[in-house]
Length: 566
Image (cartoon, rainbow, N blue to C red; front, side, top):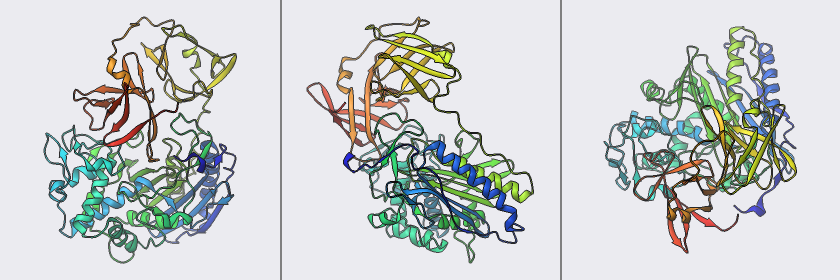
């Protein structure tokens, strides 16, 4: 990453929200009067203002549609925080993995036309593709439903240039695979006899009238796109509301997530989904194909809720309503789509920032709840409760005490009400919770890794930070651990020039290697390591040992080079 190009953005300094409405359209055959939905609009806007302050989102775009089309598009916050340029209705946002449903629909069109058999081995269409598998052949159906057992994480096409390895029998387990959807982009080109971009434009954007959208993200779009933001401290733990920086601009032409759009265009896409593939004139695909698109292929919870995955979309039954949902995360954008096919209402939201796992799901979900209640003449639901403050740790007492390392270093923790405090270097540092037993310490001595705690019989007995391990008063386990000497060469800081990946750190703790101090590397027996699960298709290996140090980390075909910075 070229740090000199970064523009500093302090937390929520410019996340004061302004609402700009393109239009407010309420079709008479769906909602009785425009006035009837104004309370829902007002409540939704009020929630979004609060939500953006809570998350530190710079800007947001939102589309609401029903079976007749656009109800409302609205824009919030800033497309460019430095210049003070607000998000406008015509501002383009990257929709990320919401693009996967577009890919699924194009492949279903090709199936309708008799050009593609979803049950044929994918290598019959792409003979150059090398897949090492002891199981039955992987098909288009398997890849569309993320059940092919292919590597899950690699986004770059480098991962397709060498042999792919599978660990699971196709069709049996869900493993979200960007690699698989990138393969589907090549499948579209092979079957449709034109480029992926041309096929997506001709088969999806043109029929839907999405004239303000692009099938791939190119340099030509940069002036129309909101500026994207990411955490300022690349490769280090990030706390909600932390400082952001302008992210590196990249072109994106991979099928796993390449579409850029506006809210009004996304409303046209929602309208088609609500009408089960029907357009104002004709159909985008057959009724049979749409049924396959939404047919549950494999059980896969959607952000903790019961759901199944179809062909590029999560499918759920929520209170007797069929919901189609997906999220999207890019280098500097986060998106969510939620379509209630039964209720006839859908929402799409996108934020011009990557906030480490955040997606605007709460916004689209609440929009659906509001308009379902409005349509039914029921009281409008209250907005979601505010999340707890990062420094609120109700069980802070669990961690109180002194933890000591084998070489005598100590960590001392105290509880101050609902806050957990680290006493360090004559300072009292309040910790931010980022997960169960996981915290961020806002101190330069601790900013490279998450601080974690381990439990035995529900009691906290150990603490760890990077390579450092500390024993609490209640720890009664072993104090020495067998360590493979050759693993010392793998410890270090590694970097990939693509902003998709950036930095990662490998540490050795208690005789085991960890990625970023948290994810264990498990030996597979072939010189490679599984990430948590040795049987999973994603792997890590260390290459080019020079003077006792690995110069390269290979992540499922993606190369990270050793960095000699801290």
